[in-house]
Image 1: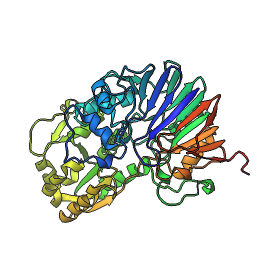
Image 2: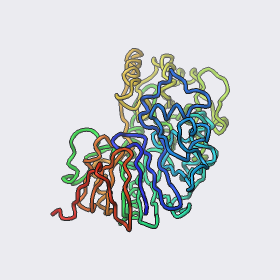
Image 3: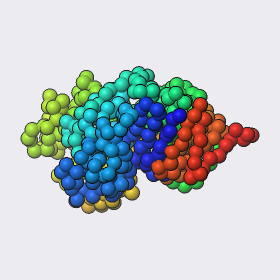
Image 4: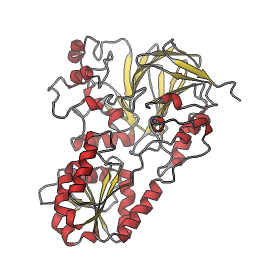
Length: 456
């Protein structure tokens, strides 16, 4: 008998943690932060007690067998190596709400992720952009590659998302097959990858799906006949080319720096438009890790040393060079470097806010950032795309997979994800356990279920 326990990330966007337990093993996925807004950067975590502090904050979960024994003992749970079953973690992609807690795990815990995610994860460690520490026992898996722990076999299936390396999983146990979508989209460079995911997972006994874009407002997904979105990564690329050709001064872009494929495509497009793309050292490091052939420059406003090993061989562009020839460059700037804009404001034509931090008005920094741009007199255009599938595609993905049981989560309103092709739909509550037996799911009284088997 297989049991699925739902720890967090059910009716929120972030912190999805689910356990799949069989007679011989326990698989956990993902391992990011829930309620990340409880983390106050002005209150540092205590050295050596970071995992404990995160659990007490409710940002991470108190789960047997995953933390260092000393921390687990303090939490009054079992530590790593103190349980009778093999435990392992799988990670879908490198967004903090799916992987931010890895540094809290016992360093011996096996953590599996796609090969590209493993590369990016290491680079995040190089650039000191990981929480607590870099986890030591990372095991890369090829797309469509499988591995087995005990009586659980996991296959890594690629999806298209706004971070390189994203994947979902097919999890096979003696009692059935579980499909986990991770986060995905259809408006990226590779919609065919997300479509292929559905075909590879077709007929799964259980489909666990994200539902971010149905979180706000009423959505009747059953009535949708097509996507509402007219923009995509390709239309954004065309817009970037147009700005590069028509603007008279410096263009500044604020890109989410883990979305390295977008920057890779910008490199050649911007050069063809007669400008040079200039990246922050951090962004340059991530792009160089995957696209060694790309030629771009690195911004060092007042000299100094580039603390990014892969980016050190790039040409350096200084503040003076931008001021002397603003129409010759596009500058990528991280939010944390925003005060540098005061030095450049006089030559900036437009600031393109495209999915970089702060992400939205739910972030306390969002209003402050736009106030800063206003004070500096900088023209700003918001042109982000987001990384999640539209409601139409959320439903279409379920239709194409046609699971016996659908479990929507990772959404403020997961109940809105419906499909006539799903045998039944279960909405678990936090800490619910759902049993999978011979391909069928059984749920306790705290979970809601609808059956569309007889829907005309």
